[in-house]
Amino acid sequence: MNAAEQATNPESATKIAAIVNLFKQQFPDVKVNLKPWTNDSDTREWVDPCSIDMGFNLPTGHTLIQLRMHERRLIGIEASCFGLFGNQRWRFSTVGEWKFLGATPPPPGFQAKLKQIFHEIFTLFNPSDL
Image (cartoon, rainbow, N blue to C red; front, side, top):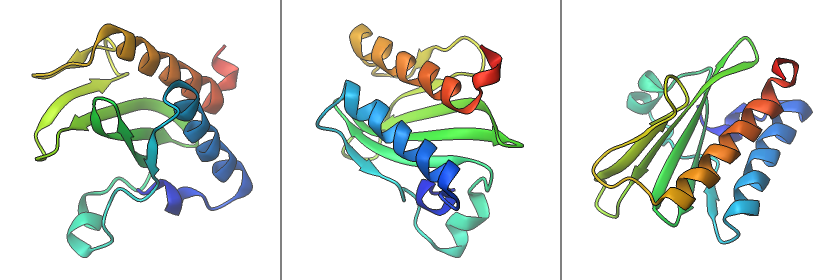
């Protein structure tokens, strides 16, 4: 579900803002979209109501980040990067081996930055796991 729609209370709005700041710290020129999904019946049918979804225009392409939630806990992060013509360049999941897959994986330095951001997002949502 669009991050903008998930910001229903001060706690969730603060966490979403913190995520945006994590990306801006690593990628200062990033453009953020807190409403990556269109609001039509076909899209709503497929959107996970428990996820927090946001788009980022990163150096590697347009990237959709989906935070998978269960009972207010973060259980996984999925990322998919798309090129100008909608072709998927790479995908990444924190479920399993934390590997980048796809035809055009990002350079190692970018991968390290993104993994660091994802670690920090887990800390933000699940501080008791430390």
